[in-house]
Length: 126
Image (cartoon, rainbow, N blue to C red; front, side, top):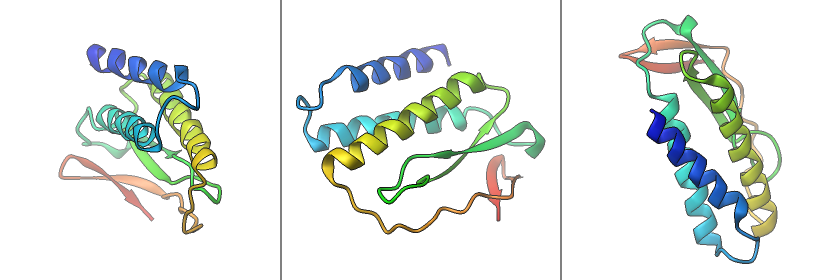
């Protein structure tokens, strides 16, 4: 877990330290994808057996505004660091959308009303 956090911190530094003209659109998208996968790895680091031990938050940015979706995470992880990563990812995706003129379907991602645990995985209730 500690190595994953170090890896994510390194990726965040790379993403934020590059000037806007040094990376291609594909390279920037790959960095965002890698950061999202690291966030998912942290979120899935614990099995879901009790929905009360889980929370969820908005993640990502649609080009038209609003979150791209929601992600469940266990309360047993370092939630402050996790939510900081999610916020950083969301801000970087907003910048990416503006810089590259990204379009989206402008649909509104509805927040779940809760979480249930199915086969050890958190599942949203709508």
